[in-house]
Every structure is written in structure tokens, then in C-alpha cells.
Length: 234
Image 1 (cartoon, one colour):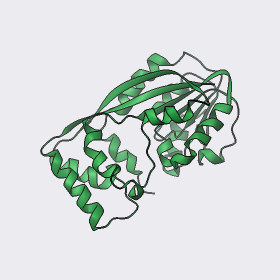
Image 2: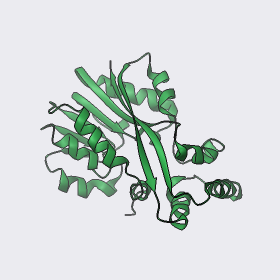
Image 3: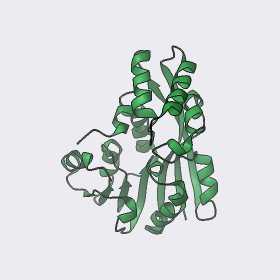
Image 4: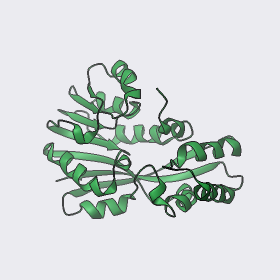
């Protein structure tokens, strides 16, 4: 089973390290129950695991199943799409960077369904990217020019909040900055071509877009990206 594309990104990004510290600071010491949607490699799930005796993990990629079961033995783990998940009631739902794997037209419905699973006073905590930072300034040339070619769906956090504003209330939004650091331009360019910009179809036009955008980077090896921790409550 091949390694997911996102794992290449984690080799250069300190996003998870920064998020671990944010979650340790923001989350309460304990919760009656937590749902973690898109658990991935379980780094952030571990923070949740330490705060509840009832952790429910949802992860669509079977690549992670073995490691999740080994590192989080008491958690209930289901390898399936969140849309097919039989939801229970949760005091907190955590969903980090996972909406991008669903069509944007379904984002509102997914969030609404997760909000409905919350107990009174419960919270949905989302991690979404902002259209800010020098990394975004670089990759937008591809993401915005040919969005239909991307193998994922993208909305910046402010647009998402506007869409769901009538359904629930954002009670807290915290912006954080993380870094992508490369050792050399060859490493950077290989990552950009293979992992950063997943395309449905490679063709001459998309290759030219990527090549042009790499040219704009020059010799830069360090980039910043902005994301937000968004806490929602009904």
C-alpha cells in the first residue's frame, strides 16, 4: 500500500508540531466523548486520546489503520468516509484539514451533520487554510488558474465561515503560521511536482503552469503558510 501524498508534505512542514502545542493550550483537560475526523497518522489524535475515555476515529485511508490501532488501542477506529459514518453523540468533534477531500458544494452539509452530532454546549473544531502567506502567493498561480485540474477542493477559511454563518456560530478563530523548509531547490521542486499540487491529469498546459511557478521561486527554500483553528458552536 503506497504512502499517502500528504506524508511527503509532513516531511517539510512543522504544522503538526505547532498544532500540538495549540491544542494542548486550547482544549479542556477532559471530554466525555470526542470524534476525530480524518485522523491520518494520529499525531493530533494522541492529544485527543489523552483527554477522553471515549475517542472515535474516522479515517478514510487504510494505510493508517495498523499504526492507529497500535498507538491508540482504546479508541474506536473506523476506516471509512465521514459521509458513511454512523455518528453518535460527541462533546467535541475535531476535523483537521479534511474538508479539502470533499467537493466544496458538500462542505456545508458535512459540517451541518457533524454539528447535529454534538451534545448541548459541544463544539466542532476545524483546521482550515487562509489565503495568506508567501507559500500561498506562490501556489495560487496553479490552484486558481486551473482549479478544475486539482485532485482536491479548496475554499479559504473566510469563505467557508461566510457559507456556514447562518447555521452555526464561530465562537473562536485563532490564526497560526507554520513553515515549510527545504534543504535545496531540487528537494523543493520534486516535492512541488509530486506532492504539493495533485492534478487529475498531467498535460502540457499544467506542466507549463507548474514550471512557470517554480521559476518564480528562485532559490527560496523557506516559506510560511497561514491557517486557522476555528471553533464552532450551534
